[in-house]
Amino acid sequence: MDCNDARNLLQACADGEVGAADSVRLERHLEDCESCVDSLRNLQALRAATRHGAAYHRAPADLRARILASLPAPAEPGFVDSGAAEPAGWRSWFTWSPAVNAALATITAAAVGLSLFQFNQQPSEGDLTANAIVASHVRGLISNRAIDVVSSDQHTVKPWFNGRIDYAPDVRDLGAAGFPLVGGRLDYVDGQRVAVIVYRRNQHPIDVFVIPGNNSGSLGERERQGYQIETWSAHGMRYWAVTDASAGDLRAFVQAWRNAEGGVER
Image 1 (spheres, rainbow, N blue to C red):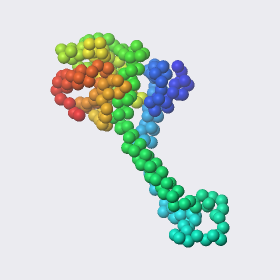
Image 2 (image 1 turned 90 degrees about the vertical axis):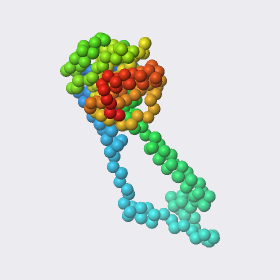
Image 3 (image 1 turned 135 degrees about the horizontal axis):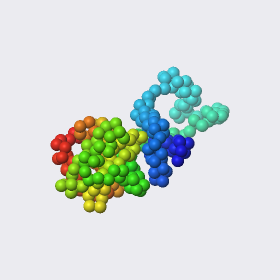
Image 4 (image 1 turned 60 degrees about the horizontal axis):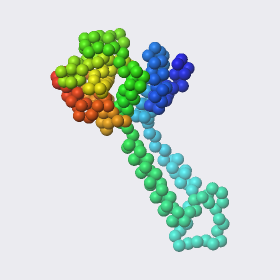
């Protein structure tokens, strides 16, 4: 894939709508192309700004007055002028019966209610990040790139990230708790290159995404597409753990991590 091919997919990637095959090809291209990474990051920023920062402007009062003045005056109740000419043109559209007006009012109210419901159902920032985390986890599995550095030694895995990202992720030895370290890799979440620490529970990989920042919003459902996910903050980092193991195993893993680091901010 070259830059021209990648640009055709960047907008879809920013919207979370890239298919699995294209996602793998795009990820490989982004590993070596800072220009496309910057473009994707800009698209993500633009998407966030339009979703959360768009201003709302109420129509001016004089516009409402002009619209109302252009409408035909309602007929007085109980009075029908049989000799009056039928309204011509578009004005005839507004001479509905009371029953039709009532039906239209009901439809309008229902449409407004549906719009408000859909607005309230918009996913939170935390839910959007969770979806991106799960997509990255699946992408790593199907591309056979779940691990870039293979080692059970935390002192080998942690230095591997030096020079590849601009922060140092924590790498914990959780083997005694039943979660052996198997390595790490680089991945992309919302256009940002991040560290992923890989553990295992029996035959189930557990990916821990380490992202700078203490808060990525609230998280709703803990299960996405059949994968369990948990998130917590500590020491200026946000951690996201995702796995196809059971919810109980993931809770035990998070507790083992917390015990190893001696304190967690939620």
